[in-house]
Length: 467
Image 1: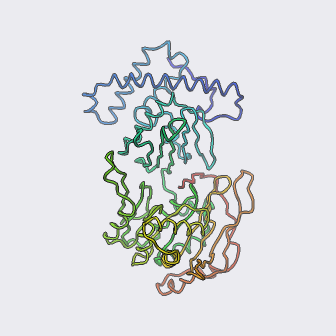
Image 2: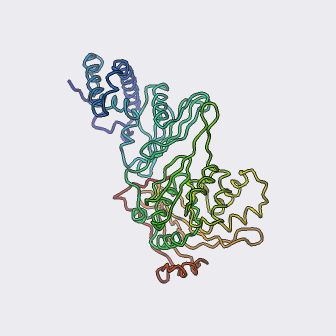
Image 3: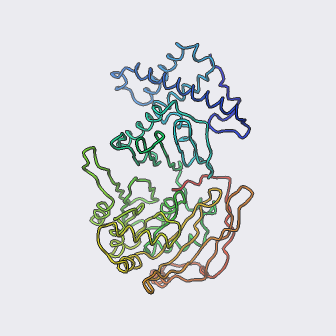
């Protein structure tokens, strides 16, 4: 017998604007009771499994076997299930056994880019660029901890009191971060940065208004010309997405080696060797740092090295690679603006352990990096390439730079999204001569000072997945 859940045709996961206080609290209590019942049945389900039998079953037969056991357990409790949607309970039991429990629906939703769990009864998601509170709950801290441990175990990591935080990636490329007591004072915390089922192409970024055609033409030529590029921006501004697309402009005959903490790059080409760091084991041994991987990458005959994100002393090795024959390399960095990115890069070079004068570090940076592309996540969750700048060198010990293209925000639209226009400054990059020598053509008047058009967001495909 199936009875409908008392949700009144509403989405069981998102708070409705029509909810009043009492209805919302009632629903929250119902969800908590539902999760407690589900976890109790799930524990009995695990206890009832014949381990000698399931070892010989493939995944499809194992799922069918577990569903059959779940239905049998439910039929034995008609008094407990009188007000429960049985189909939902079975679906969530399957998610509890094979997925992320209450979070599984969000993992299947292509519009969700972030899942933020602040505790068993506080879950937020970012959907279509906007952060929303949900009424998804876990039974208790133990239930949430079980989900975290299952996810972490799948990716070969561990999390416990001795190692209370972990950063890793899921098989679908999503990135997870978990932190538990004693570091998290109020209980386990889980953050999941999701990636779309289909990686965004450069045409998608143009459709979303994240970048304009003139910028694309310029960046395509710069990549083909083997210009070293650093992409800067805040969290969720689209750095990784843009880096993935720039890799598509690299000639197919070139060999790329990538270095990442948690592999999330989806480079749009074939000849790629991907390297990923490794944390130390329980004895504190076996750690492989980005610095070691960058050094090893230099021995792998790369044409270009891509450092997914520069965070520490590996910055020095990356700059040395850029200065010693590996032109056309790319990296990203967290920063609030272009000059802040260069300042942060200087600090990271100092973390390599060498006592280098500021003037020496700046000389390294200025000779290695030619273009800095800065991205921002603006009002309403839209991402924009807000500045493309060329480093010309040093003058009186400071960086000499010129802006080539930019974005100017003029306000917000009726949906609360930032609006504005792209523009060309009229500055011509110094490496245009190099482009001509290599036979790389640019559209006439590309750098002429002018407004390049209004940045419009195509709301029909709101899948702005970025990192």
